[in-house]
Image (cartoon, rainbow, N blue to C red; front, side):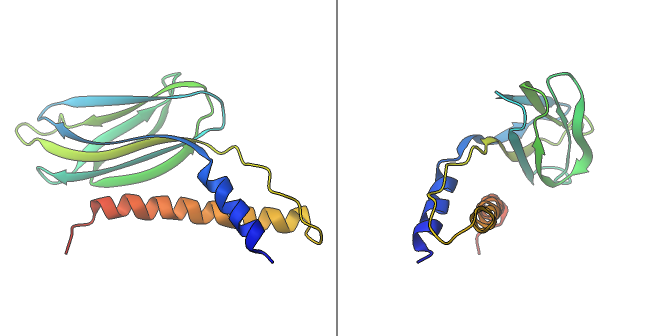
Length: 161
């Protein structure tokens, strides 16, 4: 009985528009490298994940800046990070890794940048259900979808047994 609603919710998760880039980058000693992604409208979710895979103390400095030059987040000597923020300004966001603290150690950094437009599909209405009930189910499905994305990113970092 609830299966059609659940399937419609899962379908809504699958049609979420996501633009993502997952890379491994060799960050040289004394190097600062920046990567960019563009948002097309306000309110889009931007996900940023990184993990230092090898080199030095397995740490790196990072900074994320908005199109207006405003610092969204930054950190020093971090081994990994997993963040999501809302793009309040349309334009290019920069994601920079800084290894200028290291005089000889190069580092390999895995990272992923994803821009998600969470436009949700209209779920079919069903007699006997209220919009509140549908909304609760829909929110639960989107939460599970986000958690699955986090698990997927973590699996890329964990070593194979």
